[in-house]
Amino acid sequence: MAIVQKPRLTPVASCARDFSQSRALQPKAHELIPGGAHTYAKGDDQYPEQAPAFIVRGKGCHVWDLDGNEFIEYGMGLRAVTLGHAFEPVVEAAYKQMQLGANFTRPAKIEVDAAEAFLEIIDGVDMVKFAKNGSDVTTAAVKLARAYTGRDLVAICGDQPFFSTDDWFIGTTEMNAGIPDATTQLTLKFRYNDLDSLRGLFDQHPGKIACAVMEAEAVTPPVPGYLNQVKELCEQRGAILIFDEMITGFRWHLGGAQKFHGVIPHLSTFGKAIGNGFAISALAGDRQIMRLGGLDHDQPRVFLLSTTHGAETHALAAAIETVRIYREHGVVECLWRQGEQLQALLQQSIGENRLEGFFEVFGRPCNLVFGTRDQNHERSQPFRTLFMQELIRQGVIAPSFVVSFSHSDADIERTAEAVHEALVIYRKALDEGIEKYLKGRAVKPVNRRFN
Ligand SMILES: Cc1ncc(COP(=O)(O)O)c(C=O)c1O
Image (cartoon, helix red, strand yellow):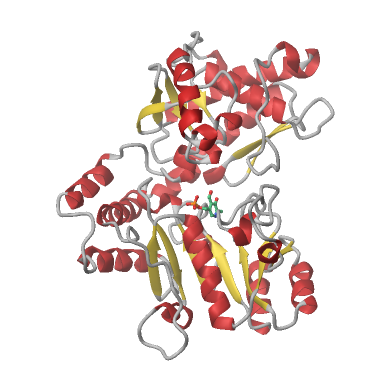
């Protein structure tokens, strides 16, 4: 393989990584914060024992941990940082706005500017309301759909992993402690790419389902016509179609997966990439539905996303600048191109290590993820841990291979080299036993019932 024959580049060069300062801080983090982190997906149980525990700074796609170790990072900020860490034009735009004030008694003018910039890029959408988290806007979409239809039940795509931290969704997961059964029973599940399963729910609960909530695409693409048929079915049954564009938005296409697939839902929700890591999310959609959150109707009023920090001005400035950069610099094309390059190199390395059926890379190039299987071809968390451990040893943090605009050709090549080395160990672990290579406990899924 051409890549592995090249001289090694720093920081991949094998060096014993010292995590002593990270180790020393971990007990305090767990003493002060349940889970040791404010987001479960970043927690210690999601990473190998031999991993940086705290990041101190980032630039582009590189980060530095508490001990001064440098890494190339993937899936940055849980896919929020699509341009790069500390991306100067965005930081500058946010900083300029901060100097004018973060929050006022009446709306800031920038609220209208940001709405205009957002609505220009999302086709067929009339109105938008901003918030801080993806969960909040998806929950707001569900509330709006319930108010508009006068129905209580919600149908979610059961093959897709996450829609919200709120009870209507988390109640359906393993980690549902504290959520009343009565709430969970209002959420039903249908299968992706299986129109009959959604039709079946509508048949079983006639006139009761307010909305269908789904990602237009997660790992599996829609079969031709499927998304249009879902929309038609929802309209026939008087329900609202909601696309969760948290991951697909600003990644599949600047106009979201709805633009990519040419199907406009009634409501859609965006977050993550909108502000390149600044906290901003959006609920967008059809005026007839969105206006229930407004002042110009005679229906019962919907309490729609009205929070103290919802329109924090510098996050809006960051979003406007992010949209400008996307439009002027072909960011989405770059995400696909860099992902394609990486995918090709990873496939080559999988072949060379005879790992077909054991280590898989899948998803769209702009959103690559990997799957790990053991010697019996069963999904394996220990093998996931081993793979991440070996990458970290060589200076790459990769819970996925989701690229950003800042992943240069050199970063991609360096990553491919690190992956090749990690897969050599993976092969040996399959042949000789994982105990010989895995240092410490395995990672665990976030949404589990017990620790
Ligand atoms: C598809 C999807 N929807 C919704 C959310 C929730 O977004 P947030 O974490 O900003 O509340 C996530 C978060 O990972 C997500 O992946």
